[in-house]
Length: 536
Image (cartoon, rainbow, N blue to C red; front, top):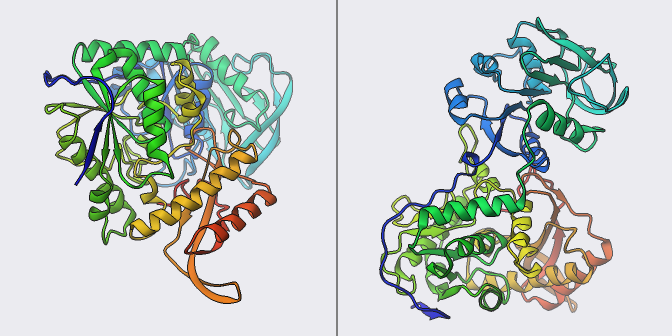
């Protein structure tokens, strides 16, 4: 049995069918970042956006016709782990070079440009990895006023040994004599080093110079412009119709709700489904926050019983996500606060969600996200995803621009499936209760230590094992809690947080003493990659 709470407002049963699609790339100049398998492809895209230019990551398999259809303002070729000499090495449709679109090649992208345009890439006797000194050769259109020499970050084995016709060399390092290639007439530039990493001196300056001066792209990708364009897009397509938004308790759905509410006002109803998998006291906080801060009509459905029933015996993490996602949507379809024929579901899907769920051509499925790969194929609701092309830090900035309070904007990320993907193995009420208490202690101590803004995410994980311990001179056989805390800019990559030992010690002591069923605490020191931030 579900409990349904209509907290404010009046619902209209009258709906008309419409479709909500807000495509940011159609609204402003776009830079295509062509991914050749580099770990830094996402970082390049982020650096372009930091230069206030919109970027999208695309597969190296993109065709010339597709490039022409997208009409990008510039193209950046990423690095990659392969040699251009190996069989099956990724390449680019050579006709793209003839389009006259400003292009910058980075690392593998530099070597590929040289090889495909008639130059030579020599097999290296030794690699060049880490910091190196770049020395300029004459005037450079690309390097601008960066100085005669500066530190750059290298990560390559092969190197360009002969430049294509029409190119000139304007920079070199000890092991890469042709580290900067330029052809102003073709509007093609290339560097062997990585300007996107912080270790490269003047790296962001070089990227900005390429984007703003060489490619002529105005820096108009700002939070205010994002808000204005997305509000206009949603308003134009939804018109006087209604929409519903699924709240998860996290930042993303809150910002999506605020943006759509700004566009269509009272025609938005938020639905908060309490899955029973939320953090301690989370449901009360979500309900109170949205009533006080946003003034949005909110429907609260208590559906914990159904979720626990559906999760009985489910162990596989992918299956668990899909069960939670489908159950979530089915409840939406049955309980929409009197809106019986709702057609649209507003969700806080982000760009990293799309990439990790295989939502881009050529990308691998790392894990299905609740709001991407976890939705049922026969779902009757159509999606409105106004944040789909944004990284997490951009969403936070957008939330501030929209006037949301810090308690929402700086709330730590929380997965759509909730604690269900932080419990290894079968999800039960008993395990959720244990994890809620341990997780609350972790977050309390992070807050007490003043580390909330420094740490991207800090939470507890309940492992599906037991270990022997001793408490009060008696043997125990209980579960371990794993503490996970990471630092990140956008969730595409993350490093484990160096939480002070005394803070970890307090967490461990409190968890073991205050949480029944736990006798051991461990700390996860795995970065992303190779791990993910969440455990499932």
